[in-house]
Image 1: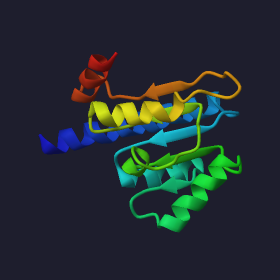
Image 2 (image 1 turned 135 degrees about the vertical axis):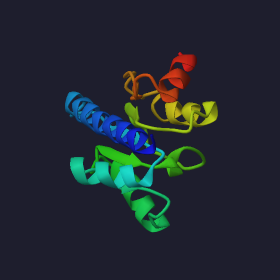
Image 3 (image 1 turned 90 degrees about the vertical axis):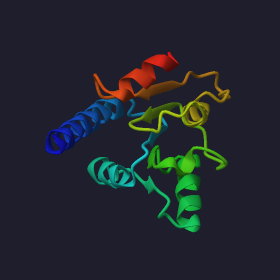
Length: 145
């Protein structure tokens, strides 16, 4: 049973990565932040899509540099673990993708706030929450709608 559960998790993660690729393709000209709760997934996404990564393991200096490059447009995308959820000055993005989280309303609200800040140009923001079908993750997401 544990082996089947592990396989299901792996397959769902693979589908999520594929879906992220589609989203990134659709938003080539946008400023995108990808959120996940799992450090290993951050590194996997960073390698696969050549995205700058920020995790709890990222030094404060490197984190500041990455965020500054995102702010000035050198980087148009970044992938992060929970370290950007609260209390960190994150430059505005107009697209956020949540690949995994704790289900916490507060965490979700913090992430949503990263893209719903008023835009100087009056532009709109988009939030994607990519969840695995028929899981607790899907049920939590549907309760938020």
